[in-house]
Image 1 (tube, rainbow, N blue to C red):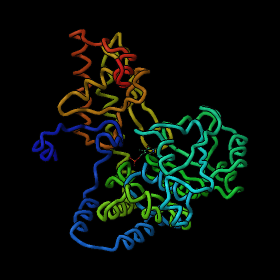
Image 2: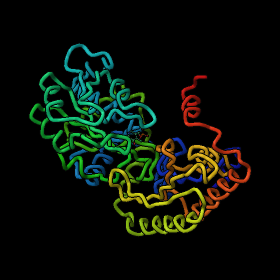
Image 3: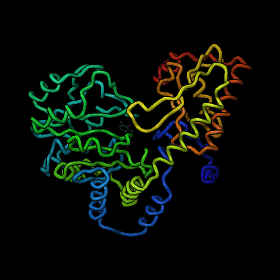
Image 4: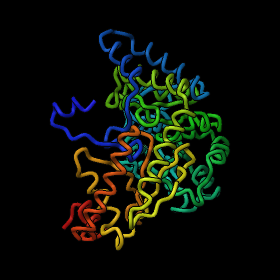
Amino acid sequence: MTDVLKRRGLTPVINASGTMTSIGASRVLSDVMAEMSAISRHFVRIDDLQALASRTIAETCGAEAGFVTSSSAAALSLCVAAALTGDDLARIEALPALPGGERRVGLQMGHTVNYGAPVPQAIALAGAEVVPLGTAALCETYHLRAALEEGLAAVVHVVSHHTVREGELPLDLVVELCSAHDTPVIVDMASEYDLRGPVAAGADAAIYSGHKFLSGPTSGIVAGKAGFIRNVALQTRGIGRITKIGKEGILGAIAALEAWQRRDHAAIRAEEDRIVAMWMAELDDIEGLALSRHADWTGNPITRVEMRVDPGAAGLCAWELAERLMARNPAIAVRDDLAEHQVLYLDPCNLTYDEACVVAQAVGETIDAARASGDGCRLSWNGVKRRRGGGA
Ligand SMILES: *Cc1c(COP(=O)(O)O)cnc(C)c1O
């Protein structure tokens, strides 16, 4: 498995961080890879392939239709574009400039997040103007109603651990209020397991990444209402051209959805729980680490290990631990979104039991080395922020 990396002089990464696209998202299933490889040598009408994808997505997500694009970020722009243009080919070719018509798109302030790039940018790329709804931790019905009364081409609703869930408007209520104005609702579910919920709640489009928990190739899967999906597909004659996906990617996404239906969810969950139990046991006696089991933020069926670092006792800060693990060879990626609170997470989704043992050992070694050498607690959080900001 690491042969290709060695031959190319690339550092292997053990992934204890979940489905992070910056390190390759997930392990592509071998059945999926085999289909992609097989179709790569043939010609096929892409429309036929997208029609097949539409049927597979419809069945898997309980939707009327579906479409495959190059990523969820692309899908977000194309869904917004569909809301702005309908099936008007002149408007489709005119984007991102729009000759008249409604171009305002509502987004709850608490959903104005960054998944590696900002959500509002993906919306604006289609030529839309983002209308923030409410404030960071409070969006009420009157915020949405006022924007709808002024005019909205669509509302984008984000489901993610990144969003502020305190005070948010729930999806079904958003759908109810929007449907009174015939305003489409687009749901970004890129990294969520619930393939049927948003469509069942009446969303016009729900977006999933093929390369995250689905373990497919890099792709964006859109499920939704037939008329809306048709207008998304028409964007390939406009801005969708820059987010083209090839025959391999479309078939790979189809195969990944089929594999998801056959997937032995209970057995995979049991293996993940075995890894978590091993981590809880192996890391238990490390001084300066407090461990607990942490249920997923948005209710996905994943339990992670939360490691709370006491810098005084461990001899280094959480962000230093994450950085030193990533500097090893093989590198080790842990989940560090909350590192500034001295918390890191280990995710059991994307690694083997043996790799998980390497992670446990590396965490212990890194802390022992920091405590012995006294070279930790040097990099402040402000220092991390300054470095990331590119400033002095
Ligand atoms: C990962 C993610 C994206 C981007 O997905 P890509 O398919 O990698 O473009 C968008 N939104 C959310 C909420 C995500 O988690």
